[in-house]
Length: 112
Image 1 (tube, helix red, strand yellow):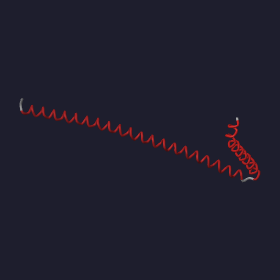
Image 2 (cartoon, helix red, strand yellow):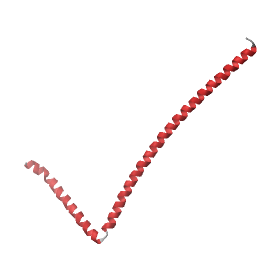
Image 3 (cartoon, helix red, strand yellow):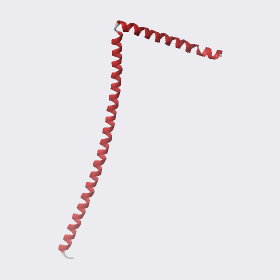
Image 4 (cartoon, helix red, strand yellow):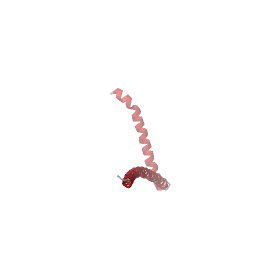
């Protein structure tokens, strides 16, 4: 082989190795990019889930507060206030009766 032939062969091998190295580097960068995108996508899904959950809880709290406010406004009307007080007291006394029944429960079970 002549010197020029050796030089051409060495240049060809050098170009071939640079091409293989470049293609491997590009493939590795594409894999890293895909992994980074997957991680970012997962993080975005987690954040969106948390935001939607928080929004749902906030809406529930707002609905409770709205109902509470509407109830207070309704109670302040004289006709509604009397009816509300009657219902409230009936429930209160019913609760007291249930407490008395539960206090007597062990004595009734022993007597049976």
